[in-house]
Image 1 (tube, rainbow, N blue to C red):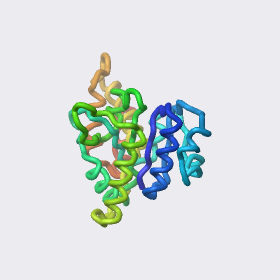
Image 2: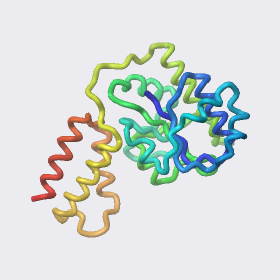
Image 3: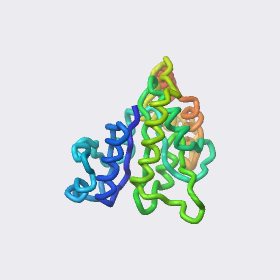
Image 4: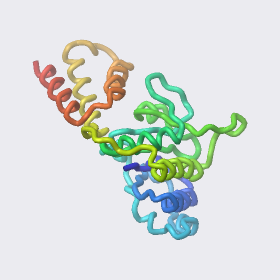
Length: 230
């Protein structure tokens, strides 16, 4: 129940290498947002025994589209952001498997040159980074994917995290609707009289940390919309 999300990949060889890695470790769900290359011949040359994987990614325009049906969105970034956990790859793998009953996990990788933007980092629920040397902190995209894919495979083989019975988690799209309703209610009440700045983002962060169930998200949405109408 893990989806790999690649944002703006530019190098076709990386796409082919990611396809091969996914086949190596039994992953089959991936999405590509704002595809930066269409040289699939080069990608297929690298995707040894995994060329079929290049026919499977969901090609979308935005990160929002790629993760709309996911309950947990983890961005790969070395940045430290208040309110977001920073997890090692193994921790991500174990938690993703433990949360499988609640919904799909999205593991998001930025482009080869600059990684995730500030807004994309804020968009993710939590962050994860590979412990590299300070002298050379950045990794090749396909190599980074391989590290996480191996950790997911190892966690599954070791049976270190058996999916627990739990209510279905709210998807990213459902939480986004709560965010829109919250913004509307706050504007109507006069709390957002001027520029929004970080108010809605910080308030929503508390809801993301609470890991709302789908039922809880529906209740929040109904309550906020009722307040906005009054």
